[in-house]
Image (cartoon, helix red, strand yellow):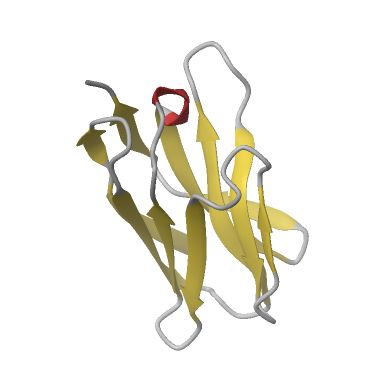
Length: 115
């Protein structure tokens, strides 16, 4: 089994910054990728950013240049630095881990961008 524990999130004004962290534990061998999805009310879950074991990152077009995903392989954590936040970034953010063709999910953390 895989456990993902998220931290960070909260309320921030437009233009502000937040950081999300996700720590993986359990059966975490053969990881292919980790990262974050998000789901806004009434919308489908969408990929925000992912990073492979080799360090290749992939970002949604809407966050490219504003968000930075990093990974600490030794600690099995990923961190999402979110800058220049916009109201459209408001959503529940879910950490994910992909291994051997399966996805594992964190419990989700709320990010609200509002004045």
